[in-house]
Length: 110
Image (tube, rainbow, N blue to C red; front, side):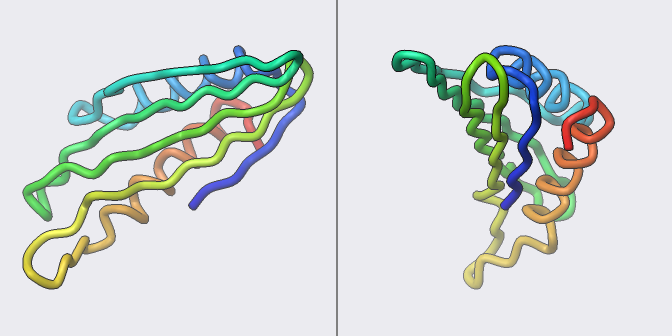
């Protein structure tokens, strides 16, 4: 699981998340996005999926962006990359999360 925070508003952070997802390779697709706002607090949830050849299946990445116009927190967790009876993921979930973390850092998120 990834947890990062910055002095970046929720809207800008959600845009950065979409950019980061777009940079994760040709087999990645942003599956959906939803958001809610209460008073001065906003939450956005973005879901992406990526095909991993080593497992012959897709993994999903669920990203939650929360905060206000001044600062935000990005939390992400990969799932669904298991294969076979014992649900081996051969490191696909960890790689998906780490690749996303790296892309967010490259875009200036710490």
